[in-house]
Length: 467
RNA sequence: GCCCCCAUCGUCUAGCGGCCUAGGACGAUACCUUCUCAAGGUAUAGAUCGUCGGUUCGAAUCCGACUGGGGGUACCA
Image (cartoon, rainbow, N blue to C red):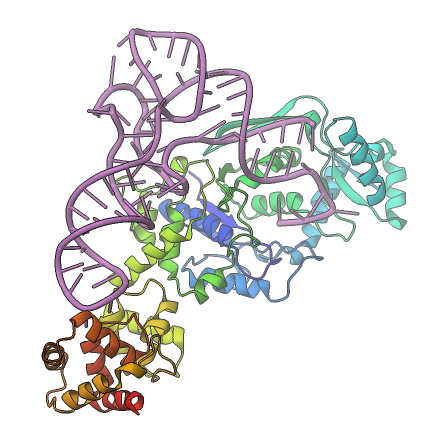
């Protein structure tokens, strides 16, 4: 059996790696791992008008952040380099011209205006909106001559009879009537290929065995199949996974959902948790486990088991899963992650001390500072008005001053005693103290927090208020 | 408009003809624990398997139609 080679082909036309691409990348990656194959990244930068500077680098970095390491890509190269389509222009032109020679493609000189008008009329007549083939009638040598001085594109010459079908690994047989297929533009007037030409040429030359991509490509697949046939190339295996959806069920979009990898990073999600979460979309472990590693995923993955239906992307479950990952981490690992996340303005040692108190209370790295920020800075404002509690607080101050063994236990003991002595219910007593020390109504366990804060700092925070 | 894909609790899913009076997870609710919040534990609600028709002794599971949703329809990917 031939080597399994799969690829993802992101376009640098957005801010960063799209979460939908992460999903597709994951499917490709674990499929490659499962089959001891190669995972390739190819940058499809053929749309010069939508190109976003720096996007390519960000995409590649994000892929690394996720741990989806590629075997071949634009940076590290590989046996079929270059892996950037803008550097392979000659290849596409060569094959486009070959298709023209064999009569499977033709030059077209139609203007965008004419095309618009044509489609409008077709719509009115309830006909399919495909190219009417006007330029197909131009004799070949005349077309060739015109192509020397006029702007032109090269279009695929789709027959108007017959059907084109292919077998999709997740959906079974899919077939299209040729007469409804558009004479797709293959080579644009700027000399760049369209996706359709580029993808087929590169997938063939790079020996891609399985084309795993999202559902949105199903309708263009028959055109790709035709190109393979006309060029005399064997078909790869096609598999179209589901497309991730917004809560309103439409295709996941930046207008309705956070989609960029960088957003997830800044929110403090862990890449492992995100991948785990994504894996749960349209697929499940044979034994029903919901928490598993990339490796475990790869061991059990079968492309045929991916569900074709489009799942709604729901952050609530990601939050839970991320929390699970954070709780399972070692204290040291979590410390490192948090320090990395909040920056070196904060003492790593202090962060380390707080970990036992926060680990099961945060779901994302970004939850850390709101919960534990008071360890680093004394509160600037207080969530309840403490002005009525000055005498209580100075009582507390006095009592705590007397605590010689500054440990959570003894602090707690003395506070319990005081509360009892003053006949104040624990809940009320500790709430006042909590706000006095942390500024907030919600905090990690108080006695332990005060221990970490230290006696001096705690007392100074108390006297700050009783002033 | 035209073409294609899809359809089990609010959400993610298990289920591949009898084990299903449909199981799990998230979320929700209640209780336990408790100095707050979490975490943990226990329990509850939540899907006549989109609808209708067929096949079968038997259907969530197979077939068809309809309905609904989605995608494509660009010199974007």
